[in-house]
Image (cartoon, rainbow, N blue to C red; front, side, top):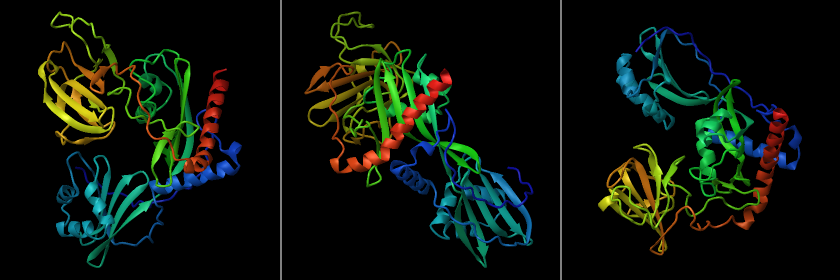
Length: 430
């Protein structure tokens, strides 16, 4: 902990500006029509999801002797910081219980700054905590109590695009194209029901992504949502657009309004590789006998998270013969899946627990009869083992027709921007 005298800092605001650039940032001028007005309204409403702008209070002229800054370390909380700065625990109690906003002081994060402003008597006059680049908590003493407010700067949303070609893997080529890791994972998640990124990715496959960049005070600090995306896999084109319904639920759909979400994911892990295929006449690598391999093996490092491929409930969770640690899930009356050789189970789950598609249920290991770390995954229909890679996977319920008009108004500008992004990329390449 290092205390030092700081100059007073006043919070400013920044205005929302229109997105513009060539290949990297996409201009809005080409869409100044009814559809664009709808998009602008949506983007404006999105800003309010991130932050409600609060005008800064009047600056008080405090009799300040010093300001103590403390950078939050891992494992610290506001109580330990108050002790380190020799501040009153009674003041801490008053701040936390001042109002609903005061409770946010209890969730300080490592790497963020806490600044304590002291008066000439050494009493705490003001406590400031920067939650993120656009939100700051301020507790100000009034008589013997504290008022706590959340000051928010305006966020500038700019649209950006990225285009890449697969040479090695989606993860590596996505980073090469300038996509942050979280957007690469999101891209894989969007198409998880249609593209097996472990088995079906090919050199020469292409992707184009239109997404948001977030700026405060003219500085980029994060990326937002993927708004539209195209992936060309083995010559087949998959397109998705983001849509928010009347209840605020978001999802990804084809440009025609068909949901991409299926009842089951293609794979139970991100970016895993198949090491052994479904084969009813395979020779077992340890027993050296002809023994049916009724599932698919995915090679991955020990500890890699394993996700359930569909909604259901846990019907077995324990050790099962040569399978080692196993989780078995029933998906209604017709379907079931099995996940074997796990190194451990996800805490908080038990026999009978309800599981949602994509939930982590365990971690890759090599328990049981296994030559190395991998996941053994089985898929059954009506009790019969089928090949998980080739099984016909049922789709979920399609979008309500009553939403289609809103869907088209909201997503057609994103489709147009995706086409423009592809055109800009081709021009830049030529």
